[in-house]
Every structure is written in structure tokens, then in C-alpha cells.
Image 1 (cartoon, helix red, strand yellow):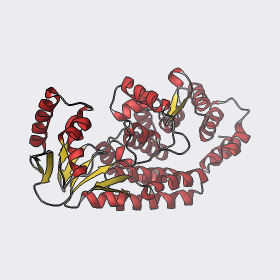
Image 2: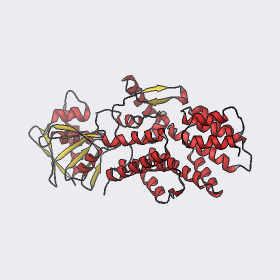
Image 3: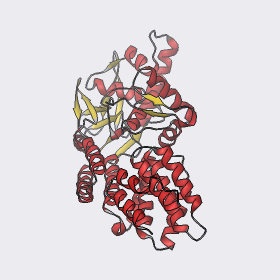
Image 4: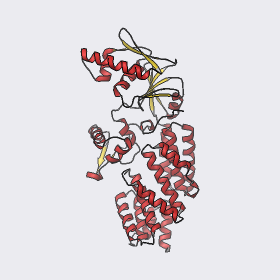
Length: 406
């Protein structure tokens, strides 16, 4: 490898893409094309970067499998950073295996790090934790070590293990500062801001206030009966009842929880659950049926009792009843939660991450765009969505992944 290629590689490792381009910008050989591609990716020119990396991969000979695999890993990183979750993960796995076979442990470890980031984006926390348990991080560079700690912090935040998240963020910051890469330091600082940003609201006895993630963790391990409007579950200590697939029941439960220790008139319940402005016999009959279903669903934790005016919720194990709600009530809150990371997402990537149909996600994006809450650029398959410079609310509680049950 010639001196210019070596110098360009060192510049990229230090986060200096312009220094790398100064050395290889006019060269068309495969190693130079690969380095130019990585430099363009660091500058945010993702489409140009992918094109250069593919040209480099085609230019390497049949005996240069390691170089081609490195190009695949670089392209995978561009895909995940640009939130192209439809990029074939099998290609990354094949490239990692090639690198391991040929003894390139540092880049193989980096490829595994990228697999972890993809699993986190998709909310596959159990799979990510299993991979972490078998992941030897000793071969990672300082920059990759910081990225790995960010993944660990992301898993801990989604599971509401706040102390573990703080420790991982501190390790990420140390690694980023040791690497002396300004962009990486800024990324870690941005991730750490979630710890000091209101993540939810608690509504109890007619009053509400904002909660930080640490306070949410404390609430969920308390003896209170929590009606969680972020995850659409009802929980008390270790017992969790999911109503995510039963929106009418959850709407009734939330209305009853917000009114506790009082009751809720039947007319209010009809409006909250069915959007009924005027109640007739069919509405009242349907309300009785749904209240019966809610009683059956919540029987292990609470009792739904009839009152002269309507219905009330009573916890079986004592303690208060509180409602945990997003910082801002929004019909498409989960879509906004993903877009609040500051990256541009395709609608197909959002559909994969949310586990929803592309058409459902597109309708949500169109609604949010009409309201001025999101914006897009590009056309067709290159269209990307992002929030305006100041997102409405960045909360990890709306991202996929279960709340702790132990």
C-alpha cells in the first residue's frame, strides 16, 4: 500500500475526511475509491459514497476478498446511518465472516458492531443482548468502542435501566474523547441529552408533571398501578397486562385512571372510547360490553366498579393509580419518536422499525407533514423524512422494546 493511501486512511480514522480527500481525490484505483467513499460518507454525501464504494468493490480482484468485504461493511454503515433498514443484513454477515476467516479482526468486530446497531434500531433487544454476550470488544478501535457503548446505553434506556445507561454513556464519552474525533464526541453528547430531557408525563389525582427517565424507572418499580400510555400496558410492580392490541379498552382504562379516585360519567367514556358526541342505546350497550371486557382483562390488578354516574377504577393491591403519558399527546407519537433522533428516515425503514405496513406509515407521515411536524426531501424511493430542527418531543419510551418485567 502506497504512502498516500496510508495517510488518507489515518486521516479518516481521526475523523478528517477533507485531509483524506486531499490525498486521493484524483485517483481512480480501487483503494482510493474506497477511501473517497468513506470520506464522502463522513461528509454526509451518502449516495455519492455508496456509488464510490461499489465501484471500489468491483475493481478489486478475485484474490482481494478482504478489500471487497471492507467495502461491504462501509456500505452497511452508510445504510444504517441513513436509516436504510431494508439494506440486506445477510451481506453484512457474509462480509464479517470473510474478515474473520482472513484474520481482519478489527474490521470483523466493527461489522458485528453494525449488526448490533441494526438490531437496536429495529427494537430486537433480546437478540442484541445475546450478541453482546458473545462479542469480544478487545479488537475494536476507540471510535468503534464508543459506538458499541452507545448501543449498550440504547438497550439500557429502552429497558429503563438508567444506572447502566449512565455508565455506558460515560464509557462512550471517554472512548470518544480518547479518539479525539469531534463528530463522535458530539454524537455521544447528543445521546446523553436524553437523560436530562422529559421523557413522559405523569397524571395523578387531576394533576400532571413531567418526568425524566430516572423518575419513570422509579415510578415503575413503585407500588402504584400505572396505566402506561407510552406502551399501552397496565402494570403494577412485576405484573404487566398489555392492551396494545385493544385500543378501546386502553382508552377506557386511561380515562378511568386519569379520574381516580373519582369516577367517570358514561357520556365521557363514550366520547373517549368511541368518539360519540351523542349517545344512543347502541352506544350504551357497546359501552357495557367493553366495560365487561375491561373488567376481565384487568381482574388481576384492578376492579372496574359501577357508580350512579358511570364507572370507577379500584386497585386490588392498594396504592395510587397514575397515568404515564408521552410528553405531548399525539396520534402518531411513535413515528415522531423515531424521527426525533435527527436522522432522515425512509417510510419503508420506519415501517420495518414500527412493525407496521408501509401504507399505514405513509398515511401517518402525510398527516404529520400537513400539520408541519415533519418534512421530507427527495422523490420516489429516495424520499426521506425528518423532523424540523427542534423536534416536538424526543422520548425513548415510544421506541420499540419491552419495559422491564423483572
